Image (cartoon, rainbow, N blue to C red):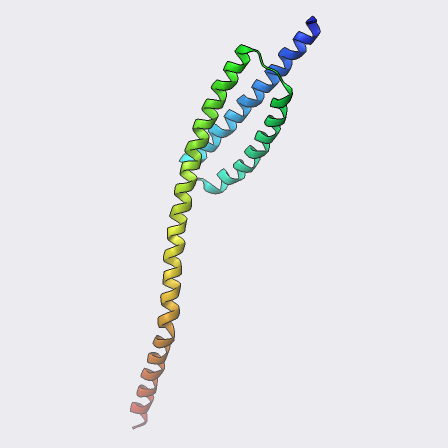
Length: 136
């Protein structure tokens, strides 16, 4: 293997590892957002995170890593996945919380729909009584 090929391989490996480090940085930020319950910003970040993962996947296919680089990649992936699992857990919890709120809101709406017409009749009936009392 020539020296220029070896240098090119090292540069490609370093570029790939830098991309994994950038992904780790992004997921750490997303984890902070989840901890702070900043859901809208987290969802915005998740979109760019998915794009970055896809780009990284394409780059990963083209680069061969030596043992040191493989170990570094494995360590980065482990940290990325730890954060990702916790973020997903928090998102599922938030989804469940929102589901309960929606369910309560639907019940309140259904109760209002069921009893509002009757309340309107009582109000009209009471108004009729008041009018007849005044006219007597």
